[in-house]
Length: 110
Length: 116
Image (cartoon, rainbow over all chains, first blue to last red; front, side, top):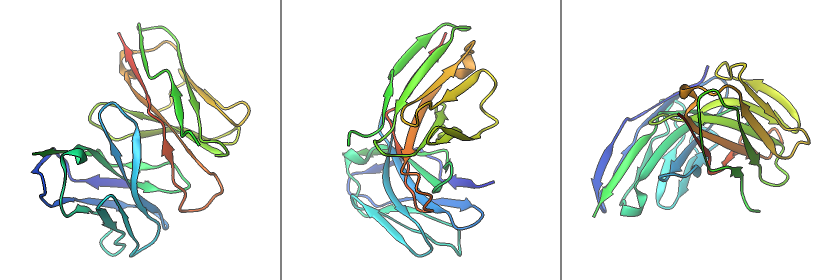
């Protein structure tokens, strides 16, 4: 079945630092790829998505590009803020049940 | 559009008791999913519905678990004879269910269950 491997945290960065969270996947067919974010005590919020190879998803300064050749969907942000502190999940799926990575906890300190 | 809602948000119960959770999807969404998330892990799929039909159940869904979506709108997830290992966050998500590959699932706030 499908699977997702993402960089394990925790990741601690200073405000305005660059962020990269690695995510690789295995899947059959042509899945969509997602990044979700979870703040303490809350459910998951969609951060961005990409539905086909070479698509770039972006939102709130975060970006990720669907790389079919390397089966990757790395999350990047050029300048993180304290408010970005959360757990980030990479997922593969679409019109099927999603398969998630284990999550990466990000802490941004002022 | 008020998003996906779940009730209750928190539930504490004693081992052996039955519990029931409710999920109200986004209006007009045909697909509804249940996931379970344990501490420090990503969500794991339990089951999903297309309208009122239950299309798939994960092997994680033991026979103590049952889910329904009787009128194709809200759904309930019941756990009978709860065990301490059932302690987790139970997440509900919905999507339009039009069958498009690029469908997005929208999640509710979750129900956190603690079994003592």
